[in-house]
Image (cartoon, rainbow over all chains, first blue to last red):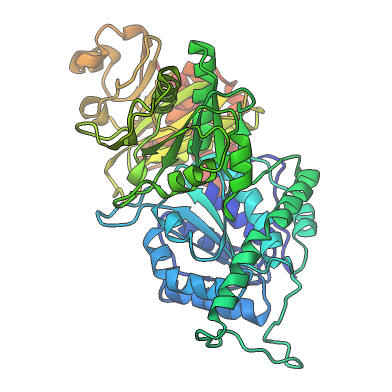
Amino acid sequence: MAVEFEVNEREVWDGNYAASQALRQADVDVVVAYPITPSTPIVENYGSYVGNGYIDGEFIMVESEHAAMSGCIGASAAGGRVATATSSQGFALMVEVLYQASGMRLPIVLNVVNRALAAPLNVRGDHADMYLGRDSGWIQMGAFNAQEAYDLALCAFRIAENHSVRLPVMVHQDGFITSHTAQNVYPLSNEAAAKFVGVIDPVDDMLDFSRPVTYGAQTEEDWHFEHKAKQHKAIMDSKPVIDAIFAEFKEISGREYKRVETYDMEDADVCIIGLGTTVETARVAAKELRKEKGIKAGVLAIRCFRPFPYEEVREALEGVKSIAVTDRSSPGGAMGAFYNEVAGAMATSKARPMVTNYIYGLGGRDLSIENVKTILTEQQANVDAGYITTDLQQFTNLRGPHLGFFKTARS
Amino acid sequence: MTEIRWHSRAGQGAVSGAKGLGDVVATTGKEVQAFALYGSAKRGAALRAYNRISDEQIFNHAKFMHPDFVLVIDPALAFTDNIEVNEKPETKYIITTSLSKEELIAGIPALAGKEDRVYVVDCVQISLDTIKRSMPNAPMLGAFVKISGMFELDYFLENMKRVLKKFPQKIIDANMEAITRAYNEVK
């Protein structure tokens, strides 16, 4: 029987510690892990909780992230509650196996502490790894601070293990900015968390010898397409389940989550759309701009990156005239992926607002309140002119001369 | 919002100091942030750590700040790092040094004319005397408590004991002594 780990109503935790406490309270059966900066403390802490008797789990150290996710797949197929954590190159090495996990419909929870991809080598936060997983068939949720990394990790088990979802879930947090920033966190009591997450009720668990099943069978052109289509439909159909679990979480915590979060959007003429900690910094910038210059600025944030909330984005942006979509990943010869999704959603809107793309923050480059104000002020200039006055895609807070692409003057 | 920037070398405990400070401040019901600019930095490399303290939830995640307090816990960094970067007219400096305030300011042009907001304390010597190794973070907290006036010393010590509870009593006592000495000696 596990030893009780004491938690206070108010703690000062960083995002890694918060995520590891969620794994402990969720009574995860198996963590298979290989360490990588900046996510290491999540699995390291879980290992120490096992070693010190705070949890009756199993911590398996392996030789690579590829093996870590492979081990998670085995443990999850066997019927256990399974989680791990990774970042960057480790995530990249996991990618092949991520598709196996989602294809086998295994409810694994992966904490991704977002970090840039080499080369050049860089340990700091951007969203390159997160984008690498965007077609992998996992549900992807984003935390904007340490509290949310904890809350969403608890919700992730409920979503993944729900019998009408049965999909693996990633919970993203920004490397260092969230993972290594200590802040006030208000955790649930051990009892409340355990009650919320519940006990896993596995489907087709391989340890049920009375009912043998096969995982990872081969399908060629006869059935592969149908399997992948079902998988895609399952992600699309997970939206109401996610909403219901967020609503249930609000009941016990008082903290409300939505797949799309909106701040100061009711009367906004201009807005910035972002992921992760950027959202919170942008909230400050938008409020200050309203006060200082009377610009009706708002912030739209994507909590749930997959399934992508097209309808909700379109609805929230109705009435907004100029929109800045921010991508914290090198687009590699195109518009940012996030821009393309928002632009796709808005292409079917009645108003067809102006949508611009900002590449920012690669490799941990700071994004200040002033940087966000500049972006929002440029959107206001678009509104005043009636067309996009800047390059369609720009790099923000980059050293050296201005870098931008695609001139489109709409008048 | 109170914003604090620590100048330190990796291994001197600025990150632990910032987190310890955050931990204590949170017990007063305030919201805190404690973070550092480091990553693959090796022991001895210059680094900066940061605190934000506010009555309301802190949304700003930028590293950029105009600090209210600059805490320098390595004596040489006062000379070699740009400790005055992004300062405000009211920014207060607490600097670890064996020099007098006049000698220190004479050696650092950026501090000229700021006598009324520069404070000195020898955190390295205090930690050598009390903790028996160079660990200037704990004494700096004592100096900060004095200069900021944010807490009563006894209140801070009580809460710091809780933050340090995983350590042996001897180490806790040494840290309490270091904090108290710096509180009394900073000028």
